[in-house]
Amino acid sequence: MTSRIDDVMDAAIANQKIVGAELIVTRHGDVTYQRSAGWFDREADRPMIGNAIYRLASLTKPIVAATALAMVDKAMIGVDDRVSRYIPWFAPRLKDGREAEITIHHLLTHTAGLAYSYPQDPTISTGLGATDQGLEENFARVARHPLDYEPGTAWQYSVAIDVLGAVLAQVHGGTLDDAVKAHITGPLDMAETGFFVADEKRLAKPYADGLPPIPMSDPQTVQGDNGPLVFSPSRIFSKTAFQSGGAGMAGTPADMLRFFEALRNGGGGVVRQETVARAFSNQIGNVERVPGQRFGYLGAIVDDPVAANSPSAKGTVNWGGVYGHSWLVDPVNGLCILSMSNTAVEGCTGRYPKDIIAAVYADLI
Image (cartoon, rainbow, N blue to C red; front, side):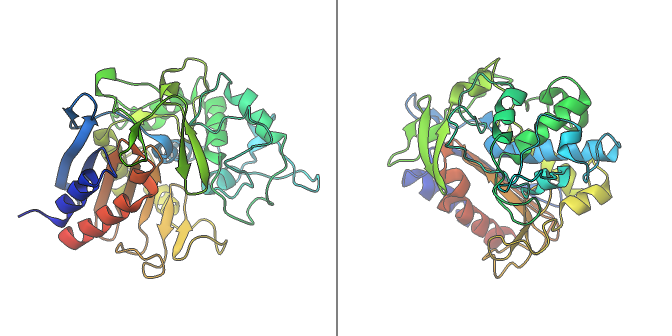
């Protein structure tokens, strides 16, 4: 007899919504479900392998945010510090010309007034597409554009974590990857996760939504929830593109699970327990967001499960990555759900991750 989780994965693959996927579910630290399904490379008739390497897209964000929090714990930076203190070249103004006071807190919470699209300057990269620009060159261009709102007064998903990455690289010294490795991935033994590909033979072939999904070209435009997204699958191999704190890493389900379990357990020795508690709580006050959800330092916070239409408990943290991933940490139920796929954007914001979460709670909680 198959489980509801099996049924969801099988249906998504049979109905050509998802090409290949991996799912790991843990309860109180024990693996209660783990499966690989579908195709690693459909055209080569290769089934999905276990612990493949994926382009992480926005699964990069919680790792970079945790790096910032670890550096806060070490008094290297402060959440209330102004960003321009560390990178003076990043000092955007408001629409009326006034100087804006953007802090580390604003970057962590996506309340800085930044956007995720700058069509008035097509040379700006937001982390997914190809570029030859460095962090300063790219985001100094962003800083020339007025903010969409005064920092702290609204919430808008944005390039904020990329700017945060520039701060961390500057303060730590070296590259953003150096900072991430020193404070998070190194201590947690996430050896196959970073701004590199640890084993090219295990790098999942990326697909774009379609019936059936199509192998990604480079560049590849895919319709997202808020407009078209331009992917560059080869960007992970670029020696000149800036290391995108919002979208630039690659990694494995095993490494990501180690990371999320460390956070669920109070920081895993890399971030203080009280800092994790703060990160896992509402950090945007009453600023408007989607019904039932707030935002912390690592992802969305389920504040009202009924209003959020979520089976998870209050205080659950969740987010995703547009290459085809989603994650959830439910501290009340001791639950971690890590869903990774090779299909953008269905595996992130489509029906698939919602159905997976519903099936996990129905089967295991």
